[in-house]
Length: 174
Image 1: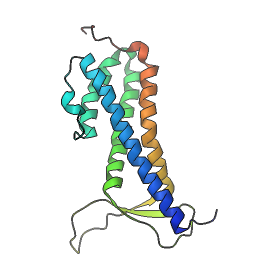
Image 2: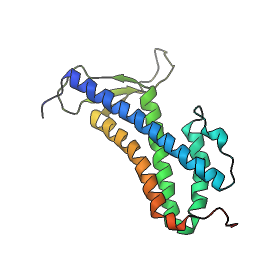
Image 3: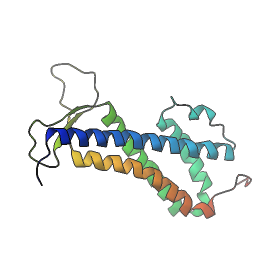
Image 4: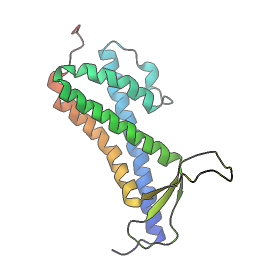
């Protein structure tokens, strides 16, 4: 493959970063929807968590026990799948936060169709002796992480559908 030119690199970079932001927004929205029905379903007031300035982490923290309670009848393997989904969300949420708030450097020399980008996490330490905390991120990895965040919405819907027959109705007092 031929190396990208600078215009192609910028287009792919901004497209991937924009998709990451959009996918994260969609994930946050869908977590809010799930929280919005699981909270009242379980007699939990979640209204304060459903306003725009509440971080996704707070919504996830409230959602997790409600999901595990709702699907507990599906057994430990099912609960482990939900736990794994929450772990993936937390990992990719941290990556998203780093990426969105970072300073990015695009390479000056393009000798590949998958150039290495420099990502410097936001840090207000401007001292001369500070450590270089920049991270090399291949463009393909940024694109892949954007896709994986988007996939989380579909994965959660799939898990809920997979275990729907085990969902605990609200009137059960267990």
